[in-house]
Image (cartoon, rainbow, N blue to C red; front, top):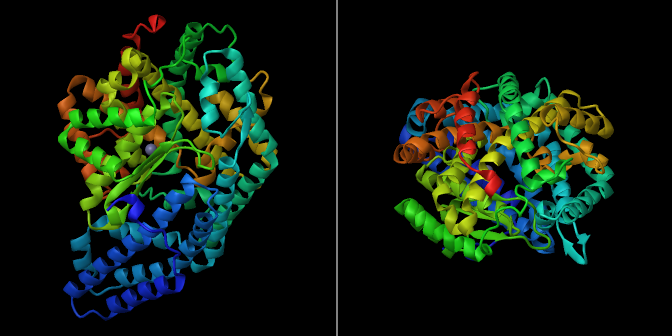
Length: 563
Ligand SMILES: [Zn+2]
């Protein structure tokens, strides 16, 4: 079955609630463990059915936010989703109260039960109206961002497609494009600021209803962080601040010299090389061809799987008017296949995104044999190890995508992996401050952002872009959509660099370790998963240093002055 054959249907709230309630009743009345197991398995099927429809609607909506019919269905999902929670919660209670709980636990594993325990902490029927409101606010943010129509030199662009001009080798083009980009945000500043304030209030209110100290505690539970806390994360940021910020300052000094800008401002750092950044040698159709060849050479399973995604229309790669920004992979239960969404714009990030999202997809595919839906995919920080490591596993094939510019790509990619870490921590530290001070005003938030930005990127000069200095965070969708998600990329980047260090020594060994990690899916919480995969705990002091130092050596092995 191909993606196009899946119909987006209007979710029938009443019918779905009845279906869930029927299962709850059945589970309460079962006579033996065998029957109980059967009912739980039926609930998995139902959850896959509901999930498939919601996912299909969300994919279509993200591809074309201007489609009124889909937009309406998406609004209905935003409302129906939270309304199903009370019934699902009842069913989960029936599992936990079942006489046959030990047998169920033996059959489905402990993590599912830990997840249910966790879900009880983050749900009360009283929060449903706020959850609906939260969805609507996130939707509003997406509409403002996706609706951008930016005039630039006689053409209209969205926030994704204008991106390539911000890394143009001509400085005037870069700055002019950046003016247009931030001009759009500035024109929508009060709207975007208000949406965020409303989101912070809603989330803080939900946390209060549920009895949490603040929204930080609540959101950590939502992200399924069962085995680490905000304190661990703060200490981790400290490692990045001490170990990585000085490295990044050196990388950017070298970059400024390379691109020949004496007094670079932050926009200039989008350009890696004076003669232009590495450019993929073709459009997205060309990249798909290259990726197919690469994945066939990488391993038999990746090759066939990639072709299946391409043939079944599970890739939507090009930037188009009305399309949401960014890139994602999502899993379609009914097809047992993932879907990749991105906004190709002719820059090297098209290749990053393709390999990154394919890493997620490969995990989704390997995890598709796991019967418990919640166990198929790990928590988000672990998901990002899958994708970010795949970016590095793809290195040997970069000559396919970039021809003679492959080393340019590799060098910039590794620089990017390191320079990202301070920025990621900045986004995280900002959010912790925001939810610790929910009463702060928009302007106070922006002031705080500028302060944290200066801590992690002290060399960033905003001359001529004073607005961006305090407001740059508003373009980071994660801050609106999924609070505290962003640090997951930083945790995962360090683990991806651990894979990189290993593949530099022994590729075969690194690959089999990687596949083993992916196959475990979400059967274990984060730190247990790392232990089982023989990966180091990034929170332990010293483990950031262990991967960063060898990669500085790799960077130094390139002669970037000749690129
Ligand atoms: Zn990702």
